[in-house]
Length: 350
Ligand code: UFG
Figure 1 (cartoon, rainbow, N blue to C red):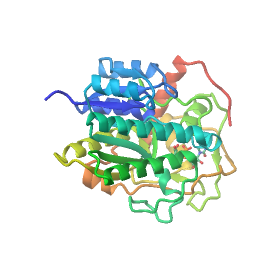
Figure 2: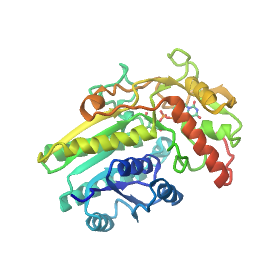
Figure 3: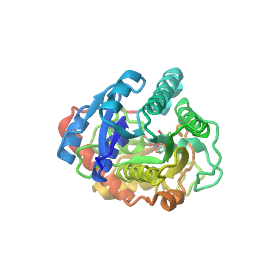
């Protein structure tokens, strides 16, 4: 049988590009589909160096039905991993219409095109943000879904609902939504990694840019939370572990054989919570650098603690996170150091 081609929308993005590597290593033929609105062509060169060949890439938008249809037909796509979406929580609060239009239109168009072409298997990028501020930790897939705090989070909740409803209606689609916890790190080669535009919102890129001297200090957003050291707790997962979860999910869909309609959802995290100060200390150990930081006020919208119960993914997908926090931070640091050799610095701070 020919190598199955998998369309990776947003395949030049942070999680998408690492998933391209994981797919290729698992014997699939990844095809990137990306509009480069929040990613860069240099990632394709990184992928070429890691894989030793050029990954096919379509520069187009997921809302462009004709382009999607053409790419999927030409590449004889057998499954889709859908990453392409806007993802900045704060920006989504400022520009809700743009977020709803983009994230939902892309998903609806994709599902329609899949149905039209008879492509059945889809993995959807969801987020632990659907759990809001959980009452019980760790969160399982049965934990309550709370009203979304941001339009971004709401696009993930609505996305999951759309997919569940389409499957409930008996459409021939087999879909898994993966609820990611906090992806960090980079490919150990440092040839691909995260490329935040402007000042990073997320903790780890902010830390690595501070260590590289681009930012004067990290501001820890609050140390008066009800956690052991007072700083927020998250479940940080190495992006390669997360990438491999997509391969495991795709394989589980293939094992369904002739079953036409299927919907399921999995938490993808390590199962371990780390506080902001734990991350700072682990980074200092991994990089050998002292990190300048100070405690600042809380950031609005942050939940005190969230981490995954990932036993469902272990039991049903045969997947668990294998890499440590320290490894992830060492890889993120290696990537940051490589970036500094390539790009002019951007030194604004919070
Ligand atoms: N933090 C700081 N200083 C910073 C940046 C972050 O102290 O400069 C803290 C935050 O307050 C939080 C932790 O580091 O406690 C992690 O923050 P991130 O911004 O890295 O990640 P979040 O958990 O806020 O957000 C992530 C994803 C979102 C997703 C959300 C789901 O980035 O896309 O998880 O909970 F919606």
